[in-house]
Length: 112
Length: 118
Image 1 (cartoon, rainbow over the protein chains, first blue to last red):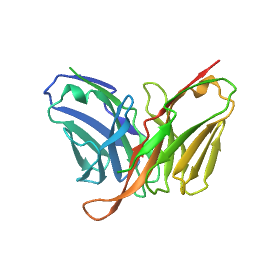
Image 2: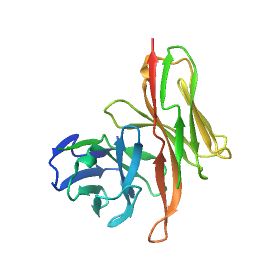
Image 3: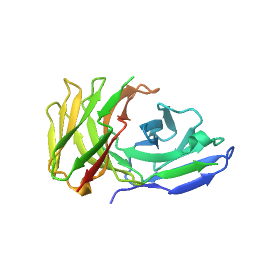
């Protein structure tokens, strides 16, 4: 079964820490995405990548960066975590034609 | 800027009743998705609608797409408790990225929280 795997289900970090959220897909998909989900706001796109080492800003990139050194792995980086980054983070991937998206199980991040 | 509006945002309905969730979007698109999310879980793909007039059905759920009206509906027939979840519509829009290539971006509605009560 095809999968998008997020390395952590729950994370608790302190304000100011550098945080890495990891996402790995086994479908050989070209495109990978990071969303955050907040109650009442739905899912909002942070960054996406359409190829190795390529990245594009989504709707809310401020305070985040990403890294894609290998096709199967897409990392979301919070350079200096803040409490307003407490949220559920969802990773997704899709094929070259962007036909269909597969989502990971999510990482619930709490910044204290 | 693309806007995707779902209504209602909250829906409480009795078992056995029918209801429709609406998804309006503000710009041209020919790809629309419906997802289901259970509490604490990820998104489960329900339907992919790719053309005007597309209609898909799975069990008690039926989705349709009218690209001219920029409207999709998710119709629930004879609701059962197991359908309680949050339902999202999402619209795929083609963007041009730095390299000049085309890239789609998925924009979500805020979700409809459905509670089916006995």
